[in-house]
Length: 217
Image 1 (cartoon, rainbow, N blue to C red):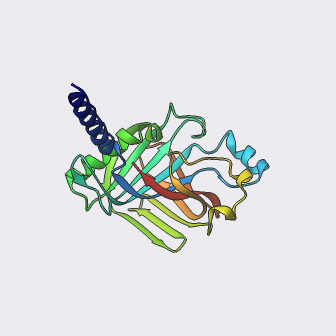
Image 2: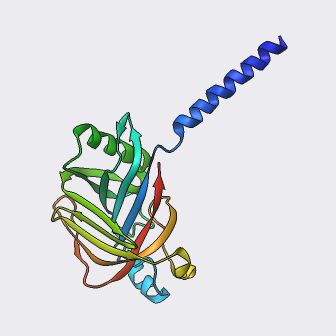
Image 3: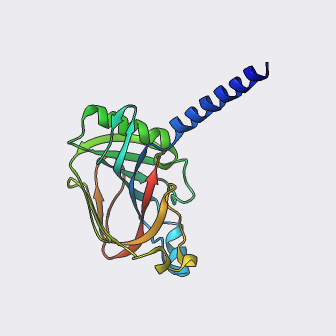
């Protein structure tokens, strides 16, 4: 009887271990987020933007490796443009988003990408009102990041050299999703225009409105 109990306990441990392994993060890569409000700025500037600003964001997942639903997502990039009625820092209920996927992806990859994000990041996206397939380019050189989505979106940013290069008490926001090694960045070009969301913007100067880091989900 004692031997049976030991074997039963071992079997349950193995099953639990297998279940934990299947729930472990399977998709990893680099994350970039640009907001329509400065995330790193003085208190007066933050206060002036908080009420009327910060209602839009762009989230970029540049996948280095991983599979979802048995489909490889390695080296793919997916972009979400997110909008809400109020500052995104306090409004998760009215969020709407558009997903942009690269035209070079297969139908299976696009289905897997959408299912991954709506399953793992539903709180970030809110209601996905459209999914569009178009050309996407993501490049990184040193601390410089460039993202383009056809003629719809252009985002060019330069992150600070290190996390300790900024004053923590002047970073007023957190990224919309959990990321590792988050560092603030400054966008130099940031413009967006499409018909799916009732928002458009054309940044006129450099802004400290970007986060970059690593993600796993």
